[in-house]
Image (cartoon, helix red, strand yellow):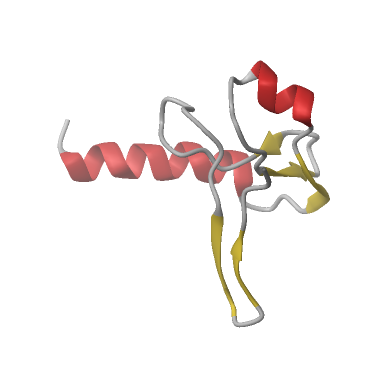
Length: 82
């Protein structure tokens, strides 16, 4: 499979899960949830209208929480909490 085909396959899979959903809740993961993931910080978590959750991670292996970049001048980064 080519790199372009693999990327398109991922875009389709991700789109199937995210496109058309609305945000139902936004919160930071709890200290307990962070400990369960062996993280030393807390990422923002976003619940979608189908009750699924998404949150940023440092990498594909989930080695830690991640920040989110935005295009909002007054909130350019959604930070990780300690």
